[in-house]
Image 1 (cartoon, protein in one colour):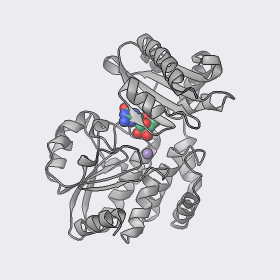
Image 2 (cartoon, helix red, strand yellow):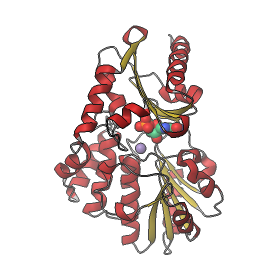
Image 3 (tube, protein in one colour):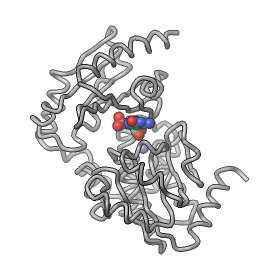
Image 4 (cartoon, protein in one colour):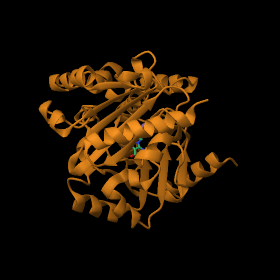
Length: 339
Ligand code: 5GP
Ligand code: MN
């Protein structure tokens, strides 16, 4: 029996009894994280389980149109309520991350658990000690794509609302089928989700075409005034201070997609975005083309990780110090990867 079949049998067995399930994604949740959580929540509840999504921190407004989003608990806003909900669970479902540190401050609560854990994720290098039942597949585009295959294998048919959540995760994690989308199976999944009733135009309007004017101005400011090209145009980076973000009335999700934009410049192979958060934390986002592995770079220099071509990390200090560290470490990295 393949490992996949074994894991599937394990999950099927667990779900043969009604479970009280808490579903958790990574912090700073994106479309794949929220989409997979809400899709599973809906499908599991329809199958007679009681499930609730507990987020480490709030979701971007552009994802709150999704069915079920109003019932999500946010640990950063209601630690007591979220902790109480976890305490009554019989099963934890971790989605779109594979190391506990990705859940931020919620990790301390989850660490205490003695509950069985199911993990579904598409990032490389999973912490296999994290879950009893583990579906870790890096070849798929997204946790949503992987989840749809699993739902089908378990005999669950997502309804229109759940299918729209899954479709959203596939579209956001692939940049609307721009990257991580060369495998034919993804188009079969998309076709099946459309057959399940996904209102594609609505999803695209909600997710990609509902920006505020200030968000568009922030993107314009970042590209026009803050984008620096380094190393002969091979590397581009943008650093945005808290003051700048506030000046453009920043809301969670407003910089989504910005880090990808410099990669559209001919010759740019690595792009970085640094955003200043509260308490001296700088969030680092990296993207690359081809073989350059930004997950390895982020892991080595910014305590992060992710995929080869899309990774994130963090830096503690000033934004100016983060820029210096980025330039110095990138110089070393480019020397190291020289053919
Ligand atoms: P983003 O730049 O969009 O926040 O993240 C890009 C990718 O890197 C995503 O797959 C995300 O899950 C992963 N990622 C982002 N930040 C971190 C981090 O601090 N640690 C790890 N291990 N992965 C991260
Ligand atoms: Mn994902």
